[in-house]
Image (cartoon, rainbow, N blue to C red; front, side):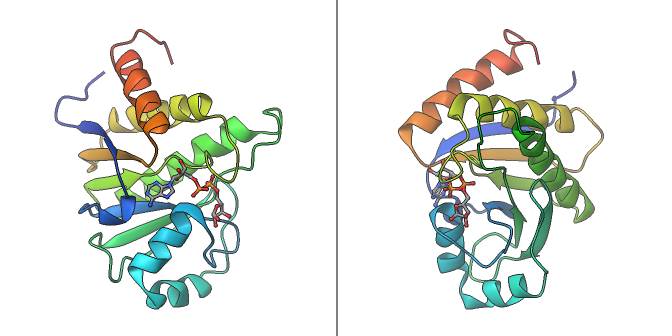
Length: 180
Ligand code: AR6
């Protein structure tokens, strides 16, 4: 495992304020905006973001699409669509893993070095927090172990509960206490 020159951070806050190269949006298939983090990102970016999103033809669950960041501090927004939790036996884990992977692949393609993620699917889409957090950290860790231009990944947690969960799991996963 070589994470020597890479950084994974957990912060509590609002992803729209992050001064990184790209922030990730937990969107829906229409890419036409919504509530939660999606609503916050569209409000902060301004209406140009919606205009660009409307040209993209939606996004499949587990996939990701990139737009400019407009009025956001971040240059780019990577929109991904997490799975709706339907009990856990409907491919939810794989689809959530794919969300993180596709976002990181797009970031790589656009030579992005700093990227911030929200806790995809853990709000309106009902994915259990701890299970989603393990998937998020595991996928980011394995991506950063490869040869990539991504240097820093920030997990931006909105709630205290989510922040505590990420803090606990990140230590255990990065130290190998939890095998992934
Ligand atoms: N910054 C960071 N995280 C946030 C912010 C913020 N400003 N606001 C909320 N969160 P959700 P989902 C957290 O519901 O579950 C939308 O309507 C929130 O506390 O935003 O993937 C879309 O259009 C939670 O931990 O996304 C879709 O229809 C996490 O972001 C649907 O919701 C994700 O919660 C997607 O549902």
